[in-house]
Image 1 (cartoon, rainbow, N blue to C red):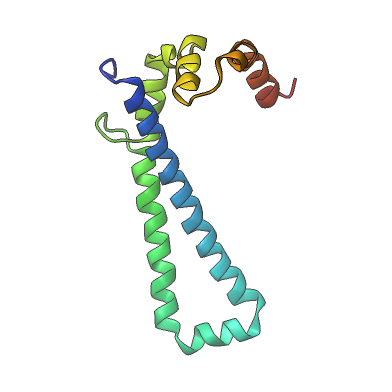
Image 2: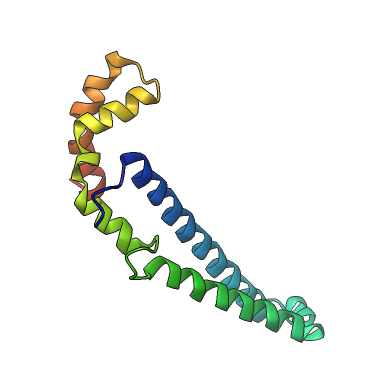
Length: 134
């Protein structure tokens, strides 16, 4: 199902899903901050009460936005650009994560070839140390 994807398309999908996650996090923290300010600051609480309908609409809008974003991220339809699709594409295309593919991406970024050998040779051990704490 995902075999026709190019490496460029994969990275574009990753960036899109990452942007969706970032947006959902920003909306969540905005919602949480509004709740915090209203409960901890008397002046803010009074301002919220003075314009209660406005602030209630804001809170409901943020809640709705969070649920819409989560729905998009976790949509299971094969055509949806979601975390499920991205994971399936990742599993179907391990070649995108090979040392040769990394070398090509770094060369495309104009990384000097003399630095590449050490960078590429150390890529997976460094990644494992960073992510596994070893």
